[in-house]
Length: 379
Image 1 (tube, rainbow, N blue to C red):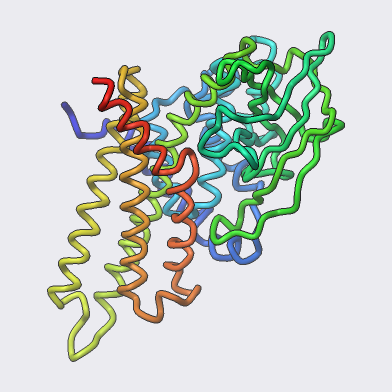
Image 2 (tube, one colour):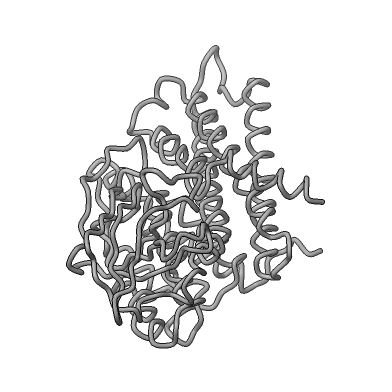
């Protein structure tokens, strides 16, 4: 068991760190305040291969491993969590097309997605189907060589901003086996979007409903076979849980770095607050929890790469632990800043806001516990 990164992985990590420091971090607060995603950043990220990290090389992908991807996403999130999270969602949706789509579908969309000419959103959640995703009601009715979509997706990152929507819709009443996956382009008649939600964090990202009203798409836009969509969606989420865990790692590292810097500079009662044992103990616990989270995320990513039979459970464990721990680390960092931590100019409160949703999306951490406990009771 080798915990050392290869020379290539170290170079990949450094490249992502430099991109985060140069292209993301200087603008993060502005993007949060103005509530905008900068498409130019995605185009620059594509130039480094970050918009198709684990896609096949045939259509412009970088063909890196899930562990390599984890290294990239963690470093990018140090620069800006919201933009990085959108990059991870794009990669997850693009992977579903590249992994399960027909040759024609892959050729039509994957090159444009890996180059960031198109940005993709993932559409599973509905107003009445959150944690119980298999109960979704959006319908795809076959009519000749087309499907007609009707229904509403909710909490969709990039809604109205993205160019491609990878959606899960019901093609039969056979529960999870009655769900199929489709690709819908922005501008398709019958596709519309709700108002942008007002959120606690991830403010740079538009989040809204995606609405289908007699939205007609060609049958060739179905990903894989009818009835396999839920399986594809869950496979996408295994990687998505690692991705969002990486965003938490990057955010928590940024918060810990800020806390270390501030406590060394801030003086009270005649000495730096970093010299107080209480502060030292808190910092040591934060660093330990972050390192434990990192190890769990890297291990789960490696298990996905090696197609380990229990990789899904490892992803659930890692996502639950890392997102819970990172959120607490950021909160402790804010506390160490005292009243200054509550001010936007110090940047820590933005990390707290952005990380909080990671405990909810890609499957709530309560659902992660369900996945873990079911695995335990089946043994």
